[in-house]
Image 1 (cartoon, rainbow over the protein chains, first blue to last red):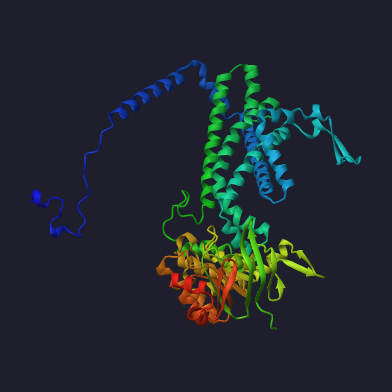
Image 2: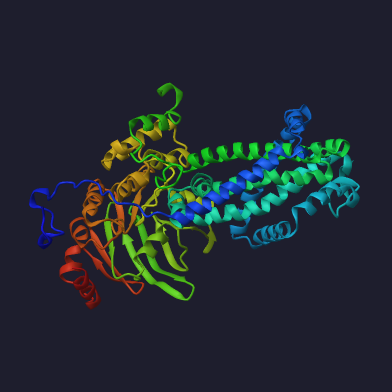
Length: 322
Length: 254
């Protein structure tokens, strides 16, 4: 055994060999455990009280959860979310590029748009689109100031509740997405566009091939967050009778007064949808994380070897060479 | 054809109130390797970027193979080129950056083939053969499927050189290609550049590698304070400089 004199110096025979793993007694965090127990106790109490509360009417929840009426509402909610996010995404890219462009007029227009749509509540915007007929009873197509008119329609016929909902949600979303996209574009190093330009790529191709794909990595997480937020924001459309999930359940409880169980149905569906969309987001992040070994999405540590090379290039090689 | 590949006459360039080029004259003949040396802030990188029109010059004339860079000249007036025409000029000039600037979302192979396919509209097969050939030339045929983040700095810079070569440029510009590399990786990049020089490529190289300049350069230009203070063959510039500032700079570097 070692004496105190050579403490800290391992015996010569052990040098260069891996010593056994350290086995130390861990610090006990008693306070944390007591707190956790209290929280679990309270949470269980709340859940039991909810489950046992007769006003929950679980049978009604079960009855309405998969009714065609509910499912149709769910479909409309998904449609509204996806279309609004597409409008928002495309609008956001346009606005971001306008804001970053050298043309001061385009930049000012984009800034004004973002200022207006971010500065007013989305609920108010939805109401305005819903009651557009009161502002413009008829919609004309033609050249303003010239008096040239190609056609005219009644507003209420062209813009129904669904269209109004899409416009309200999508145009509002564009303002928010514009800032996301702009942040994403700025995050790409200027050297990237310089390299693309020096290869003779025109500006548009530099954007679509080099800058935006890299910006996507930064854009996707908050965009997914916005999508999930949008799923729930669609419920605001019930104020103009948008026919999505909440509107339909509202019309039911308007007659049956089963408000709480139907709200539970709504919660269950919104939770289910956000869960599904989150999974989609994970895969999108993984796709745009390509080439960034440190990003959360790409877990591969080894270089993409021959197998990956064949996979990657297979799509790029013309049919006759496969 | 005796048009020089690059001809800069009294080129001026400033960023705001900071005048970086104060009348640069430079002449690079076809097939020559010209190394630009000088203290930092002397304007070496700026003149290089002007040749590729990544920066606009404000005075003087700058032409590549007799054609003005970024402008048309008609009856004594200069007209700015449209961005598409500028892109076309750039496509014929390869550029290699200090920070490599490979596209991180593409594999090495996609990096070298994207411009031939998208810009030159080559068939995929043709671009793929070219890409293979150029990666092979820089000794990285076996790294085709790797993403830049999976390559060492020296390998990344060699891919960047291959990417520029795939456009079959008439002129290659190198902006401090080895300055961001660990010392042990510098050699592999310089070897590729040497091979390129021996093959007859016209090159303008900004570097601090005096050894490379001595061995490979046909001419060395020393820039200081935005002007060329010394221009001549390496033996003359290094062993018998005219300007005392050249000697001062060289003693600081060597």
